[in-house]
Image 1 (tube, one colour):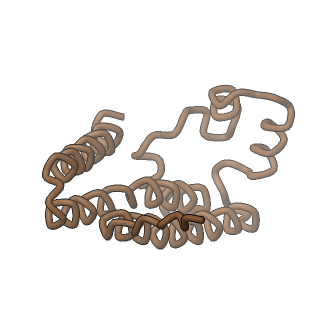
Image 2 (cartoon, one colour):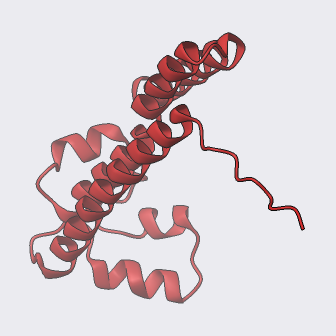
Image 3 (tube, one colour):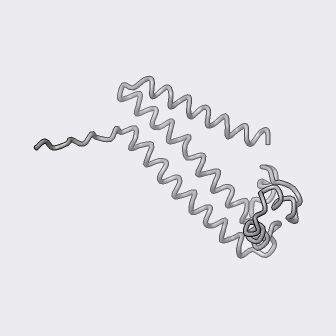
Length: 142
């Protein structure tokens, strides 16, 4: 009987996976911290009780924000000016989790280049540049 041989995982895949893993774990703690702060803070601009009640009654995102105390859909300027509120900390954690793709892709592209996979390395660099541009577009033109 023949033993199936396991293929070794390429170092670029290990590097990518480790970076994504640890940065996502870190961002999940920031999201958890922001959520806890949202529930215990009393001076919040948007009450967590209101958000939970609105979600459970089936309102969509626009209805929830327009019916809140701020009466608008928040943009990046709102979160920057209210940085110390739990809602902003939660959004920061989510953004950090999405950002974790960028260093992971660039580090993986380096190891792809070293392992003589230039097409994949160049593709990874382009993917990182596209991700950076999309994040900047969301911030600059929001």
